Image (cartoon, rainbow, N blue to C red; front, side, top):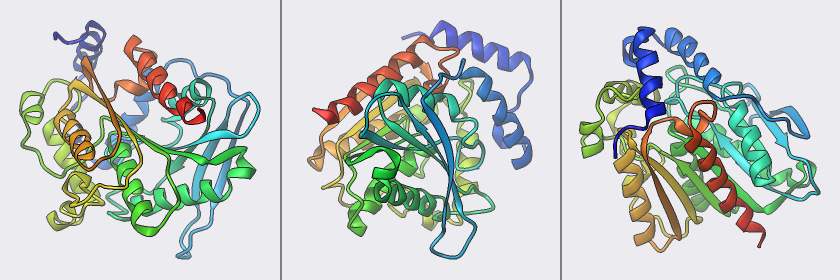
Length: 311
């Protein structure tokens, strides 16, 4: 279908502002530019409580920061571990604040947003190990957080969706924690750039093919790393035993096809999957509830799946 009118206006505004693609910036410039996306998230919703915690690293490194959002209501709540997107390179828990608040309220869940380390300073698998550590911490501290360890969900968008898929794989392979559901929002699932959606949406829709190459280069140390299933879950030999998944893709997105291919590969492995493509939308729309009406619907759709865990 045609590009969503709200997306068209946003892209025209960004073009008028002269914002270059990320691959034409330095890392510092990209991180500064990424902060502007917070303005697209809309008014942050109030929640019952927001707390910051530090998780000790088992390797003696700096402690890992997480931000915990608690909704109103009676515990125990479902537990969501949220991994923000932005190419493993930019953004932080501040940029992900509004979507975490919206999810906490809509899903009636405790949401833990993870301040994982970023590339290129910290290459794969360091960001992933941070996300796995945070997921274990949430499971182990479920009672303290007012959550139910039997309703543990990993969720992420874009690069964060990649991290969520990989944490689910890692939890299966390492014997825990038990994850009840994975919610993958236009996830990066494969270190490859030759799908029809990469060709059709290479330029002009905010996330470009060359920017994707740049982000991957910041995350990985080598092409060999890109063949590791913890970096490219679509290349995993076996996806059996993974938790049920909700996978969201959007039409005008270079990552569309690999997200949909991952949904199909999960189905073939016997994993229950629900997939929804948002036609007319561009990459990153989920967190832009201040711009896109469909973003609010996407939050509601994800919340419906998470709430179903209570039944």
